[in-house]
Amino acid sequence: MLRILPSLLALSAATLLAAPAIAADIGNGWSDGSGDQGDGGLRSGYPTAPGDWAGLGDKDDPLTFEFGMRYWYSMGSVSGSSGGSSIASTDTSHIGELNLRINDNSTNTFATALAGLSVYSTGSFTSGGGSGSITEGHVGYLGADFGWNAIGDNKGSGAGILVGYQYWKEGLDTGRNNYTTLQAGDTVTYDGTTGQTFIPGDSAQNNLDVNLLRLGVSAKANLGNFIDISGNLVGVPYAKVTGTMGVDDPTFSNAVYTGPAQDPYGAQTGNISSMRSSPTSVDGWGYGAMAEAWLGVHPTQNLTFRLGGRAWYIQGVADETYTRAYIPDPGSDGTTPPNYDQENKVTSAGFISQNNPFSLFRYGILAEADYNF
Image (cartoon, rainbow, N blue to C red):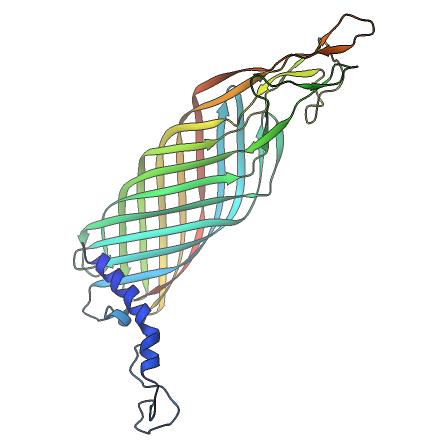
């Protein structure tokens, strides 16, 4: 099982030594290997397969490597709630991915790695603050698995178990949710004639980070030299979820000012009397499952094209913490018409909303091109 690590080191060292080796071959009377001196060619003898750079391309060497690129046409959905409000989104994301697989056929073990990032996404969302379109943000992930084929032919085919780790980010822009920057003890700016207060604010994008454990089974079968099929079914017994989940939930007072509310709350009237004063932090856990399946063809010994499908699903509950500011109306000296000249200080309190459910689902079709050696 430990053969994989020194092989990677050997491959890296051979790459670094390749450039000076070429320079050392150039000099007076250098030849292209045809026997003629000074014929203007480089000395022959460099192998063409990258695996041969470190002596890994030997037909008797049990280590094989696959690396390549993938395109994932991915459809996703995210749902969650916070303090009585909820958010839900659906999207279509175009994701580019890099992948690597190392097989040690002498021990029927393998290691895989992947990293992906969306390049373009569209979709829609609804929340307590309204609805809108998804035009920005990213979906991203990276991870690695190590596996052992308990049933294997020592030629790449087999079935067995795997364990791994994955980071998954859902960062599509599903609306920036507002909160005030006022803190306890601050004085509110207001209009002395109408009593209207002016509330400073900021906003936060919904963003979830998932760190998850993967435990599952995998299988791969080479059907001759031209076709292979492979897949895995993975359980996620634990996933740590962190991030932000914004909610717009201001309350209003008509005691002093009865005109239109501040943007974007034109549907209400009066002064904002209470509002969250921080982004809403998410901290929770979940569980789920992941699966993928592939069909590959080998037009040449070193090239593989594959088509496949993939689905990821996580659900769970999270605690959400935030602070809330209480914003008093200005006071009057009792004159007529009122003259608002009595300032009041902001107060605040911290809150935690527990056991808020959430779910993440992403699925779609994939295309892959690999180089093998």
